[in-house]
Image (cartoon, rainbow, N blue to C red; front, side, top):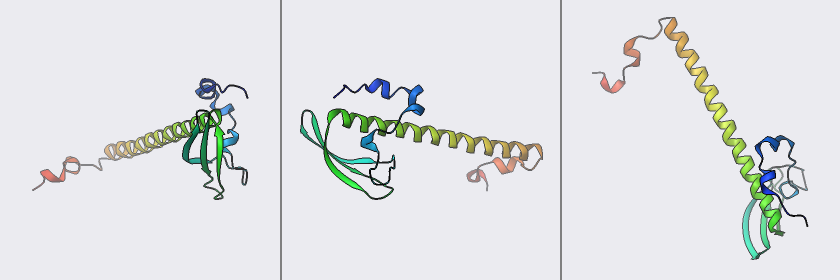
Length: 123
């Protein structure tokens, strides 16, 4: 078996070119959302992994070599990075939209100083 090159797999410039590793692809519905839910070391080179598909509820418990487990782990990290990036972009878009609404309200004199004062300071 060829040696797994984790640094090439995790190169952010090649993420769009990557295919989902076979260990992370559902054989039943072809979803790329397979996740490992349990890991147990069998020996130094083998890990017993339980994998599940959230799309079709397929599950499998199988002994995988260390390189396959590294690919599963790297795919999980890549997916988490993508989720975090999407969440950051969404938070920025929401903030930008709220700022634009505030600017328009200020320009139209729809906000008075007392609208900004904290309610705890009001009598």
